Length: 256
Figure 1: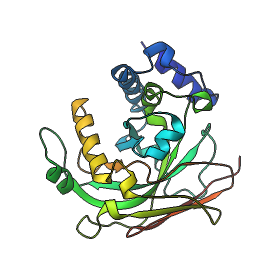
Figure 2: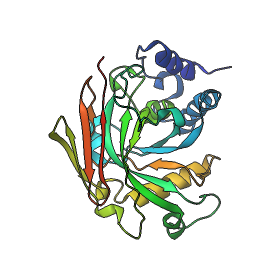
Figure 3: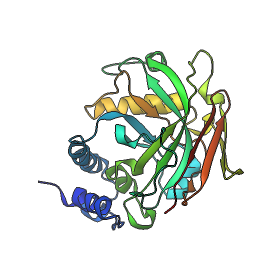
């Protein structure tokens, strides 16, 4: 039987109508309960979609301030969330989307059991530039940490750029990012803004995923979390981001 919190979020996604927060059902700070609600929805979605990785959320102080939370979280990436090949990205199914620029890690080895920071680094096959389209099923983005965790870390879609760069070619903490909308710079940031280093964010995720019983696996994609502030998505806009050493990633959005 689906829990009331999971059902509320599923109904919002199905109808396209944002719902009230779920913290009244699970508690604003009950992270374990929130991940249990996330898992319910993940298991249901796996009937029609395949898990391809994870996203780390709330790694950037600017984004934490935007949303009023103060700790990272993670969500699950599915194959149907990858819109890298779509031009334009359809607005259908998006409720109140925002977009941010990130580093994507593609893993070449599992991160299960005991591991060190060196093991985390060694597990990375390549990096790519990425855009994440985040969304909230909760009306007005009125979220606590438990709300966003339950809502699959406010995830929606992602776009990967063409570049594939190895860690011995580029230190992710040194990346500088600029994101533009229709040619105007709207967000700036750096690898250092992502929990101090995107590799620290990856290590945090690897530990959290392992402790929740579903460790990171070879071949999976991990989105690092935002390098700079996120901005709202509107129909017809073009978004591009340049990450030093990784090049450009860009996408277009369809009309409403």
